[in-house]
Image 1 (tube, rainbow, N blue to C red):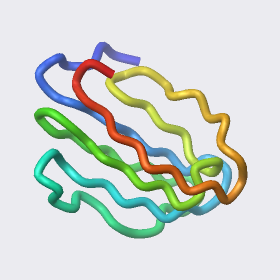
Image 2: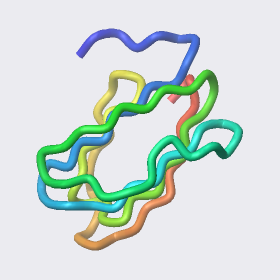
Image 3: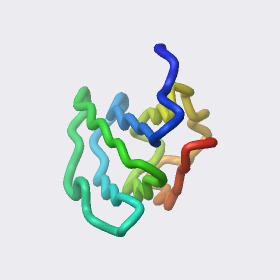
Image 4: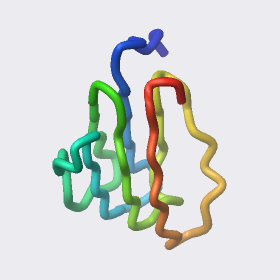
Length: 88
């Protein structure tokens, strides 16, 4: 993984074990993406200060925030609301 830029937040959501509904918003609450991510699909998000995610089935996705993989210890079907900033 390459080093993440320090002047913004980067998030990558990868559906790696099934389908999941994903909603992503920037620091102003503007919707960046709202829909289904099919198995094998990837979505990238960037904002200058904050990204907020809602994962419909958190166990079905892999998250990489600011170049670091987020451990996936979510239960199948678990809905997660997550917010990340530049320092995460």
